[in-house]
Image (tube, rainbow, N blue to C red; front, side, top):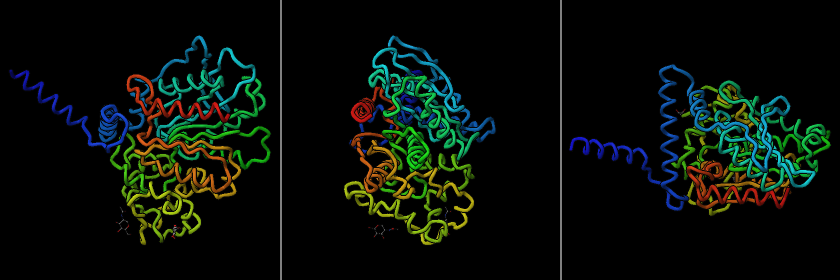
Length: 406
Ligand SMILES: *[C@@H]1O[C@H](CO)[C@@H](O)[C@H](O)[C@H]1NC(C)=O
Ligand SMILES: *[C@@H]1O[C@H](CO)[C@@H](O)[C@H](O)[C@H]1NC(C)=O
């Protein structure tokens, strides 16, 4: 009897921990709740270890993730898989064993807030394998350096070094990649690096080989407004809660973590910030850039007075290499044909939607692929054990677009 009571209490406690009221319309809410409780428990355990001074929370998280998720480079019947380097940056390479002689090529940057994860994780390994098989393409999945050991602009420089090597005649020839059919892609923080690389190489007249397309999966693109309608609507939606994103940004920019409440109050983009002019503000003005069905009833949060010295202390906040949404129209106009995936239940939805709109205004051919039941990160949860339905659909949509446009 006592055992049964204890069992019931534990079950109730577990259900309480797992249960989370989710907005209606999100794909397979119970799966998302389970995923969220797993993430939350990892985050909480690493917060505790961090607070006790055992190690940095990110190191612990990455160790747990590698232990659970990292897989060896193992070739299959159809794809040859090796670990190599690209411009000095560790990279996993997926090459189809048969098919066309001259392949299409994709350089891919994984997500994880510039601090977590790896292209060697099972989920990314499976994604790249599938891309390689379905597209008969060479996929290069780059392991750029991570925060807190490396901070901006290290990740950005790694992304550029790997991309530059990828576009070199030597690498293209070695892997039999068609120079006319190369793509830069990534999800979340990797989408940020992909967008930044597309801008850098689009404007570089000295390059002989250019990216044909850019494919950005729920990218993070700006750090000045934490009150876009999607930040307001999805602040409590797993797995990327609003405060996590502020924390990732501060870590990426090498700034003091204590600035988190200030960022979450939009105090860093108050009107008394001398470094943020009207032109910069217009580039992320969502009242102008988002359609009414996404703006909904939300109101902008613009402070008259904030904490004026913060942008000079953290100059990365307005650096276009960290925030591709802040680029001028001329730079955007030189970037390649674009695919931008966004999810309704994602704080970063409006970063992606505003970017798609700005690219379009700059004359770029853009496909904006929006998932009404999608959540942040869904595409990498397409496989077992979660097998998210929207994950599967979004992955198929992404690969289908590449097949038609690359
Ligand atoms: C944003 O756009 C709206 C609508 O076009 C305009 O009224 C407002 O002045 C703009 N704000 C900024 C900061 O550019
Ligand atoms: C934001 O700025 C205002 C005005 O300077 C200040 O009163 C408030 O404490 C600041 N909030 C945070 C979280 O820093």
